[in-house]
Image 1: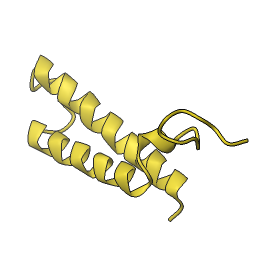
Image 2: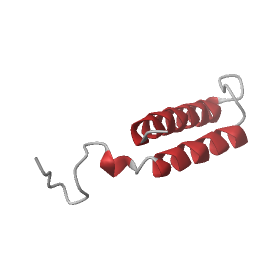
Image 3: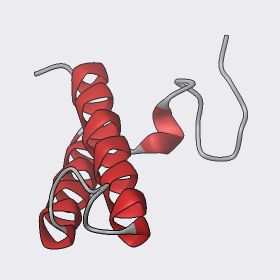
Length: 69
């Protein structure tokens, strides 16, 4: 699977996990999934992001910010 697809999938998992965990704090009525499932979804999202090269590679530059054009 291409790294960009892994980054997008990882970001979606991470966003969904944080979103459901945030609404779980408001109360059980607002939560889409229980909080342990949210933590697992966040872990899966972080795994996909790391497999895709991490968030520092989004702009296709190096870690120190210099780009090679």
